[in-house]
Length: 206
Picture 1 (tube, rainbow, N blue to C red):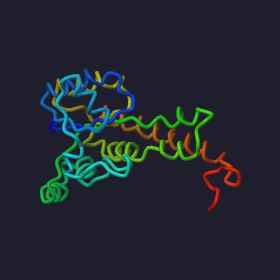
Picture 2 (picture 1 turned 180 degrees about the vertical axis):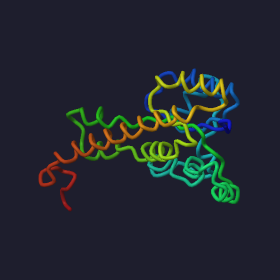
Picture 3 (picture 1 turned 120 degrees about the vertical axis):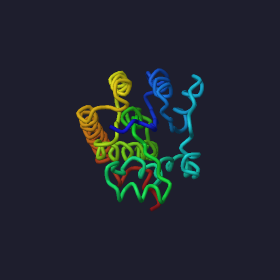
Picture 4 (picture 1 turned 45 degrees about the vertical axis):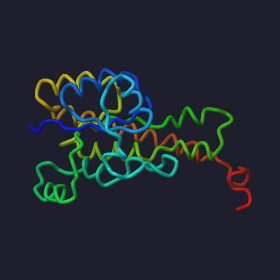
C-alpha cells in the first residue's frame, strides 16, 4: 500500500482542523491549502503550502478560481496503478494528492437571510469545492476524501497503523461525498426555482 504524501485542505467548517493538520504534518504529509484555512493552520504553527505556490498560478476572479488546475485535479484523479497515468504525471510534473478535506460554502445559511439577493446567492454557490470532492470520491481507490470532521480520528488512526487508509474506509467516505453534493445541489435548485424572473431586480434592464 502506497503511503500518503500530500493532503489538500480547504474548509468552511474549520472545527478540529488544528489537531488534524498537526497529526498529518507529524506523519510527514505535506499540506496544501487556500485562504482562511491556510491562515488558521499557520496561526497554529502548522506548515502549509499555498495552492497558488503549488500550481504556480494565482487565485483569481475574486476567488472564483482557486483549485481548478491540472496540477490539482491531475494529482487527485490519476490512478496510481495505471502506468500510462503515471507516465503522464511524470511528464507534466503532476504530484499525487492523497487526501482531500473539503466542505462547502454555506449556501443554505446565506439564502436563509431574508435580505439575501440573487447575486448574493450566486456568489455562494461553491464550484471548486464540489469539483474537488467529486474528483476525489470518484478516485476513492487511491484518494481519501473527508467532508466531516468527525472522520478525522479514524483517518489519522489508519494512517498511523499502515501509512494509508483502508479501501473500505475510502469507499465509505466517498459515499458521504455524493450524499453531500447531491443534497447541496438540491438545496440550490430548490431556492433558484422560486426566483421570479419577471419581478427580480437582477433581471431588470436586460
